[in-house]
Length: 391
Picture (tube, rainbow, N blue to C red):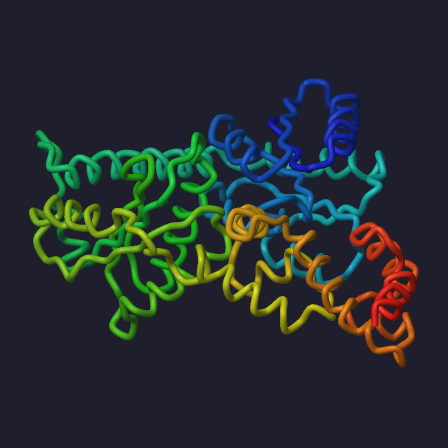
């Protein structure tokens, strides 16, 4: 039995592992600190059970489970959380989680759950597992054939007649990651799952990994679906999940498979990154929108996650991009913005400190005073006295 524990807290990971190994010494237990680490483990190990934390940096546990179900339908999922809100449990069950564990995790409850899920996994019929293996092998064969076809290589004796019959007319869609990174497993995993799911919603087709930075989809749209609708949905979802800028290109309708290599070359040229060519929700435009939002809402709750969601960016990527574009970390920028507003308000002698604190987004006047002092080296009262003395 192969078990994966995904949690960004090492104490939780190691504690859960010790409990499982003590009760089931023969089980293999793998650890991951993030969704990215978990993807690498699941690509290399035949995982049977996944225990995943909900709140993790980057992709959270529920998003990770949602995207993984398609590729690993046999895996049994258990969600771990420090939050007891019913909405979390509801969503976890809706996505297919077998159970929902609250931190701190009780040892007896964990052992009972692992024993139950392991028994269920063992009872799965051999034919089911063989069916999943056959589907996986067919997928790899199809990818290999389509990749050769897309690059213009000879297919030898391979018969693609069934493929031609199934897709008499189709379009190609290429998603290209615009920046090279050392490890693109997570990005490929996200794009493959999001694009595959959307193709199923808009028609039928499949997705293959084309090269290190690109994935290629073949889609046959349903009568009432359009390329624009698919593109819009794809852009929206990828902007939410991906840390890196990306580019989406579509081919015209294709009826002859012999045209695929030519169309792929055109898509690759069209998706080559150009200066200022960034999808809505990323790059300069996203930061510009974020700055405008901050100026208009500086007195409200302004978590990094909230503002990142306003511009449809992953919080980690948004944080990196924000610092790159403004020269300041997100938290420092918000503090500076609020302090500047506080300085303006402190010039109005009729306003009390508690009122000023509330107006710039601090419910606690002591916290406001501490933040102001760290930034200005004087308290708000001392600053007000200095301003009065200069007049």
